[in-house]
Length: 306
Image (cartoon, rainbow, N blue to C red; front, side, top):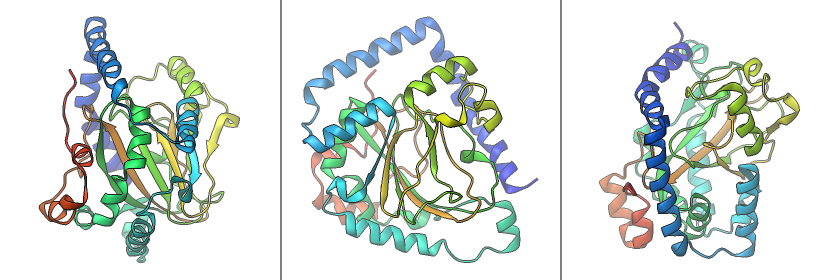
């Protein structure tokens, strides 16, 4: 059994408790209570949502309507962007080492080792930029939790496995992923691909999609024609802000060139799922604690609204 197949089976096993929890939450009495608590939390927090400038308001509108917004990173106008990008590109370079034959055969997606990601204040401080948090908090509608980041190399092997198949994330009701391309992504280069929020909502009903599973192209085409799939072809430094809990999406299998990217994850402070690398190590606290506000610190801690 290849690593891709093992990963698929492992993901199925890992998702089992979440599937059970989700089925319980779908029971009418449980769903009603959960929905009531959620709406109450949204209504209460509405008075505390930060003000946005006109550009961020435009991004927010696109995100609410489409489920995904694609922009040049310069348009975010964040002061720490250059430091973060330099560090991210350096980490991506570490992933460019040639793969041995067995690894190349078995692994379609290669990530930076988790231990290498824990002492990187340049990246963490960018993830906690107030202007970025303001935009995401307005979209989520609740206090937000920064769950961490991942840097990935997508091998150009054309393999359909794991996140290269269509799926919806269930970290939370609204899960914001901020994906930054670390190289130019062209046709055949494994772009992020999604289906709009409205079309996804219709497809969920048509496919009775409640099983947290991956779907093949053939399965998704039963509800959504290829003409409604959007591949995000864009140059290095492009930012994709997307709600992966509201849109069918995938990393399109690269066939011609590899893709390098960094992905940041945000949810409410009461998510259904936590990323495994979402904690802050002592070294990071020592480096950044004096440089971040109380609001930014709160984005690093899980709480509950129900």
